[in-house]
Image (cartoon, rainbow, N blue to C red; front, side):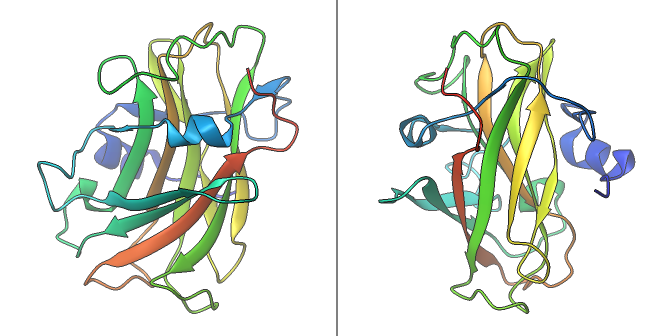
Length: 205
C-alpha cells in the first residue's frame, strides 16, 4: 500500500495525527464498532461546519437494514484550505455526549472498521470522482492515529482499516475521510456516500 507522504500529513493535520505503522504486521486481537456505536458518533474533530461552511459535513446518516451505517458527506467547493477536504467524525472526551468514551479495550491490540464507497454525486461508475483515503481512528499513547486505506470506483471501492493501539480505554474513537488529491474531483464540491461497518473478525467490546 502506498503511504501518504509525511509532509502532506503534516500540512493537513498540523502534527495532530500520525499514521499507524501496522502495515504488514500481525495486529493481534481487533475490536470494532456496532451500527449503534457508529450512530453515536457526534463530534467533528478539528473543524466544525456549524461555524464554518467551508469544511466538509455529514448531511445524512442512516443505519441501513444490513450491516453498517451510510454517511452522506458533503465536500464544499475547493478553496485551497487544508481542512477543506478532510472530515474526521468521532466520539471523544472533551465534546459531545462521549457515548463511546471509557470503553475498556485493554485486551485488544487494534481497532478496525470496514469502509465501502457507495456513490459520488449519485454515481458509481469508474469515472465517478477521485480517490478517498479512509481510516479507523482511535487514541494511542498521548495522541490518536489511523491506518490510511485508499478507496475509489476506478480501483477498489472497499477497504478495511486496522489501526494499532495501546490504549486501555477509549478517549477518542471514530473515522476519518479525505480526498487524496484534487484529481478527479469537481472543484464545485461533491457529495460522497460511504458505508462504515464493523470489521470482519473484529469484536464489539
